[in-house]
Amino acid sequence: MSSTVNVKALKSEGKIAEIKRSLSAMEHLSSGTLLKRMKACGNPRCHCASDLAARHGPYYEWSYLKGGKLRHRTLTPEQADIMRLAIANHRKAKKLLRAWEAQTLHLIELKAPK
Ligand SMILES: [Zn+2]
Image (cartoon, rainbow, N blue to C red):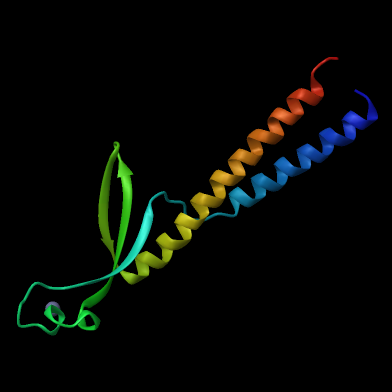
């Protein structure tokens, strides 16, 4: 390998090491989306029936795909806090995996015999 190729390979390997560190620093990971919503209870005599601001909540709803079907689940505020981070991590992890793929391809091309 030429020294230029070596330098490029080292740089690429450094980027991969960085990606691995970022991934291993993640505690929770989840796909899906989180919605914060207010609900009307359905009781016609409740304030929520006539006043949007009097609706109940907030409720946290996590939507996710399972077996190709969209599912919904209500979470407590505490669960929602964790889920919010887990979803952000999932987005970040997907981005990191794409970068890892790109660096791997880069290395393969660098190391190919000319
Ligand atoms: Zn109500």
